[in-house]
Image (cartoon, rainbow, N blue to C red; front, side, top):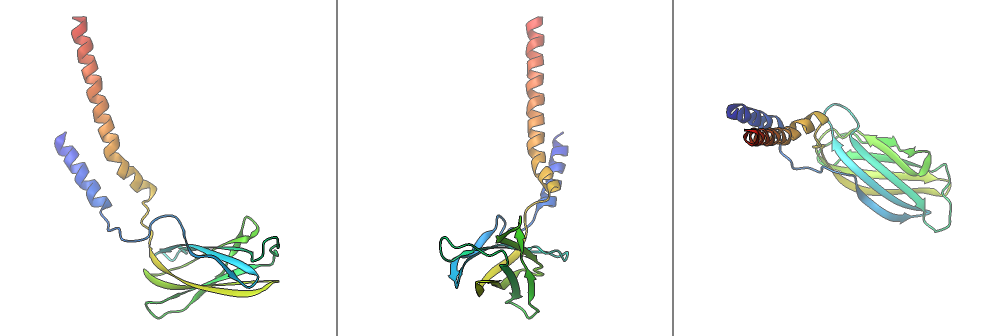
Length: 181
């Protein structure tokens, strides 16, 4: 039993060993309530790098009227452009889509093909005018474990619970056997 436990522990250690040196968590703001012309703009991001050509760099653009009491027109849209700062390459631009039909909350995902610094430019345009905001992000690989890996992480705790329960059941049976004699 002890040899099997050592082998399982070693296998789990080899499967999950990975360096952790990156942003791993919820989105965070890169622009907060910046008033530009007729708009107040905030940009949140989760700048994940991917190797499988998926758009892992996620950007949420929040657009509100600069003056309290004004209404935001429904034709407002945001274009997000990213460009690598640490190597030459093309800029990528995509139009953000309204979240649940709300023009004041927009989302877009872009492909960030390597770890490193990226310039981010958000252009907001609507009936009230056109404004731009610039920022930077550090793109990193997403280190959240897959659901399968979560099972691997839970395995030692499940095994410990199983062994503890087995021990308690054996003690109870032994005590019951002694009491009935």
